[in-house]
Image (cartoon, rainbow, N blue to C red; front, top):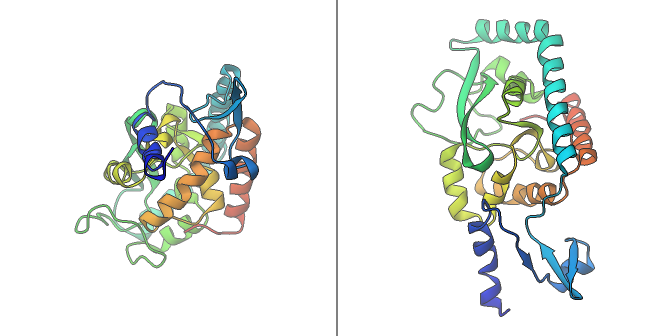
Length: 251
């Protein structure tokens, strides 16, 4: 297609992202040469399947089984440690121990995400939804440690048990941000075709979101994960995440 027609392709694909339709497009020569996409052939013509159903039914069942087992182990075995975290939060600052926030899940469904509170109470009362910075003054003393070690994310294993999330997948965003990203970023809707995760390929490959540019950069990693989902890749992401936690590379 002509250059101006090719610019319309991501927009069209984005509008079809949440529909159960098969889409195949002709790849650029550079994409196939450098292995950036996987192609299939129809009558000898190489085509990209845009939204392939990667996981088989048994793999999806096993992924869900692992989600449940790991979440139960973390929450039950780690309960004494979680109680200490809750006590530290209570002693450090006023406000609830858990922070609950609306997020967008699979298919655009809204759910309540749980985290240990790491900021002062009513941190966004005056500003509305904003990204947290590296030296954000709203973060409490205990909250800074929790974020550094990603311990504030532990209550999300409750979300995994409930089926709102998975261990591995694109990180869920707030509805206000998703509305903005849908308009500004072609193909962003594609992230909503799978359950969001506690961790993901974008989280181990890119830094914490601080701007729309970061979201655009991380979308490339999310799309790579969606096109290459496998239990082996999930395990690789989980072990990489454990390494990040051990090295204290949280934000």
